Length: 416
Image 1: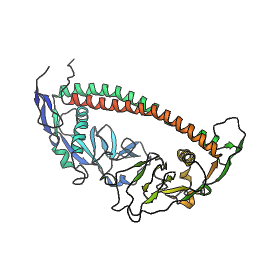
Image 2 (image 1 turned 90 degrees about the horizontal axis):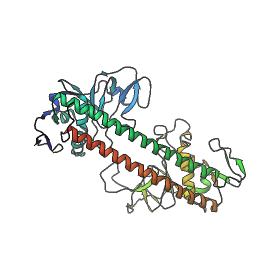
Image 3 (image 1 turned 90 degrees about the vertical axis):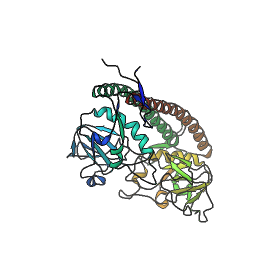
């Protein structure tokens, strides 16, 4: 076992005696993306070429769109300037690409293995980024990166470590992709189970009739059909005195509690304009319809609280099981029905517009049976999904620890 020494670096701990400590600026020049402004709006969501434009904050693996002309044709490390949980992790880019204004690029000026540095930057970047108070400095600057101290073994050992990590991380990534594919399949199965139950019922032997709705087709002959406003009114009860403190939020199709005193996220100074909601209400997020077609837009309220008035609060006005209607509207949501209700160019809907949507009315007994069936079935599916998400978390932790142990020299790749 080789001799180790204290690195004097909080995130690194002990390192091999023969490893050096250098600043990033000694091996890299760091700059912002060229022509950055033209990519901030013009190419978002567009695909007009085969050269990727990278952004510091996007759900699509850092890619915000594609263009025909490139700014860079090099092997480089890429940083997001954004600080926080949504910030993009460092990337190693090869070939042609462009950058938006919230990215920084590192180009080597001395002989170094860029793959090794990419692996080392991941634990370093996480440590340094989260140590920056957001209220003092909301983004990383070139000066921040220039001051980062990094560890360097010999160039030959850099090559050995990067080659080993390339192979090891590829194995982990393949397992991760397989599990994620299983999760996606389960999510799709759950959506199909919900859609089938809320539009066809549980008894496959009953007489059916045409619903007149293209995306639904036939429904049981005994079911009635009416617009949403037949079953729901709009609850508009402002928290005008600010007395209600149970802050609720729509998150991934669920209504969850949120700390009203948190500093995370965007919250108003006053909650007096928020709506007071009640258990059994259904919340609809009717905003940004054309730009955001991925979010889940419905949620069932299960407790008294307050929620932003930007949402539509559907209040039941008849003797119905609102869980059934939540499942039904959720099915319509994942079928992207809401996106066609804004006359093509509208970014949002109001209650009057949304309430014209046609929905179904099984008997109350059948509504209850459908809800019981779906609650049980979805719980089973969610349990399996949760187990697989735990597997993903374990693989992610294993990948991070493997990278950390080799880029700090705590484990050694033998020379061939």
